[in-house]
Image 1 (tube, rainbow, N blue to C red):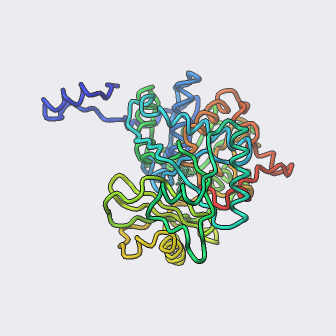
Image 2: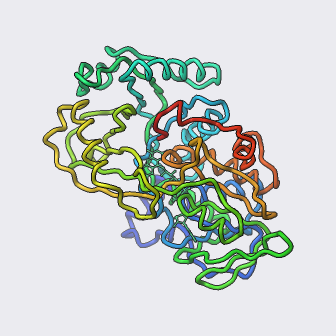
Image 3: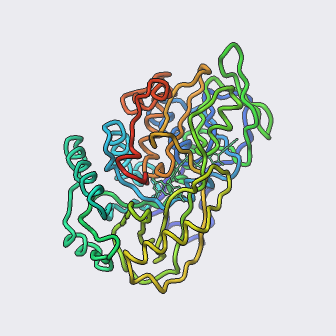
Length: 415
Ligand SMILES: Cc1cc2nc3c(=O)[nH]c(=O)nc-3n(C[C@H](O)[C@H](O)[C@H](O)COP(=O)(O)OP(=O)(O)OC[C@H]3O[C@@H](n4cnc5c(N)ncnc54)[C@H](O)[C@@H]3O)c2cc1C
């Protein structure tokens, strides 16, 4: 793989950009791989990347039914933070956040990581107490977050109305190194890295069945034929239950639509990410100038990539009260993705009842931020057959034992 650099740009400029090679190859599947990863979203691609980079396992295929990054990875609002309450969550999200810090250099691909600062507004006494508790927990976990006053909030976000009649701002949980990254670029960068290591990324290839012999995985059926494998990693977010059913086991996952929308582009108005969990809305401004807005999940299970109208209405109404300046803006686009929700709003990185099948799912509404850490931990699980310290607490066994890692109570919303 030719490295991207200033000199490469200059060289290509002199020859009319005719010399760029494809960022990743699109081969036909081989008959057998050491590891097949199903799902070319961020988590699947990162798993494959660290399998090659950290564990030296490179006879790997990533199988994708659509186009890579076309699932939730290319549909999210790109918020990155690690200010979680519970120790296992804080550890894996902080690992991810710290990998994001120099991911562009590692991948030689600009993922546009922008640690612009992230605020979670406290708009009720309950939230204030909850976020202050999170700050104490984060300080013990070695994660830099702080509690800031309403005045400091106003300084950071002048367009915010802190004296709203219904939702006054009582302060905020602030993570200075939280922020955003370009979601497609994260998928593209990992894909390019995988391809450069000789891995096969096979798009437009749906997995339709899982083959097992004596309780052990031996391969998959796909729309491009049967492919053998020694190990199988299922990393398909909202379709995890569907894949698990093919392998003959069930997962404690519900699939729902989560949506987001953007406004018409405007001049720079807000240079941090603001989350208002009480009113269930959050907002940041993209480099193009659009205000990127997201809200909550639909209240019922479904596989549509749209989302209901009432969320747009309710979230926009709440955000208009918090940011009166946006009341005349036109909305430009709206879309949705299928998120994979667990009961405790924490992910699953686990062995399964079928030998050599591993599952990575349950990131729900908040898994973009965790892509590097999740890929790192999943690669270790697949390579060694046992979870390392980052994945140890996220096994399926916790649902049987009632040992939840309850982030739903801590955050109210898990973005
Ligand atoms: C609107 C929205 C906003 C969000 N905002 C944020 C945010 O601000 N911050 C944050 O951290 N997270 C956010 N998230 C969550 C985040 O996007 C996801 O948790 C994350 O992208 C999941 O990545 P993934 O790789 O697991 O899944 P995906 O990117 O969905 O990838 C799974 C892939 O599996 C493929 N697949 C499924 N079935 C099969 C099959 N049978 N055969 C082959 N391939 C298959 C799919 O086509 C898909 O490409 C948001 C999500 C949505 C929908």
